[in-house]
Image (cartoon, rainbow, N blue to C red; front, side, top):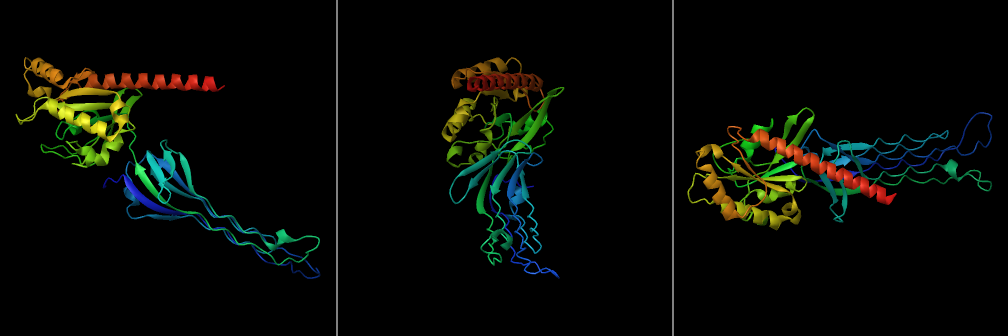
Length: 352
């Protein structure tokens, strides 16, 4: 299925049913009076977050969604049936904007979360409603109001705990396939990854996290070069970024430190929150170096790049170092979750 992370749709809530103009007509009942019932309300349109999909591809063809109209009222004071609400399922991580006003309507991040995006029309009033002591036979009714119609833009930002960044062919797809059940395309040429891939990494019993692999970045990605600009936004929700570096590129003219710095610049250009996220350096393809070569190559890279943060050495192809990396990531995420829970508790206590 083609990966789609932006689309526009039209949603139309149901119209309200019209009120009924009717008079009671029964044998032996003179001047029975009005008995026209109210119209039913239309159906609302809701967006519902669903974690069974991670793409908006279903909206490539189906772009208009209309809820059911309310039925008109009837005689004998019968109220028309209200229209059924319409639920439109979207992937978790979908942000909803009003195209006409630019308003941010909502952000669906939790499975089952609901967002009303179009209000139903109200049912009209039957002539029974207008009966009074001075108007015993009213011929007045009201029509149902039309349902709300909106033009919406849906933008998907994938929900993942960990995001992988790096140059094309740094080994991101190989790493996510080695650590999870995800099976992205892996080949020995650049840009084999054309859309984000998600993988669930199981660390222990009831312990897991979600890792996202986005297409490789190149110099100028933040201005639209390569494929990166389309997918950098998917890293904004992550809690940790892993920057993969090929420590032994096949081309001797490639400088790993220069490539590393280029990616850092692109992240900074795209959004400040990406630079502020915790980032770890992952030195990949260490199996291509002899054991006595690795320390010197690694130290030279660290000195030239100026990196002082956490460093992990792995071989995504052989799996070397991936288990230790997964354990470290899990510990970090648990610490972050605990800190967030403590901060939330302190905020709640302060409000009380």
